[in-house]
Length: 152
Image (cartoon, rainbow, N blue to C red; front, side, top):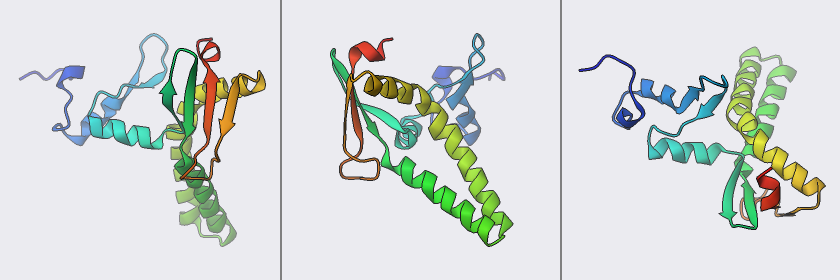
């Protein structure tokens, strides 16, 4: 039995919850935190569920991103909870809202920055098309970006 650090191949869903730390790995060269997705398919499904943008279609000419509507509702519900906590001077509710907002920023906002920059630049350069609404579950916001923009 080895007492060293587990390798990527030894991480399976049957391991203890402490293995969830393996999802985020700090790169030795850049010092940046990145998602590894090595724990289990179930954890990959959860990560996909909370991503702000996901690729739904990819071709040689373009990439289509779909915005996750849950992110909008999550953000505004958190702001409402914080407002209620602050307005009625209920500190635990306000602090809960602050903690949830910090969680939102860490797992939704920061990972979405790269995709959002590509989308914003493509729309600014008229190389993308937008359809849908960021508030609709039935017809979510979709952005089609030319492949030339995504490789820069």
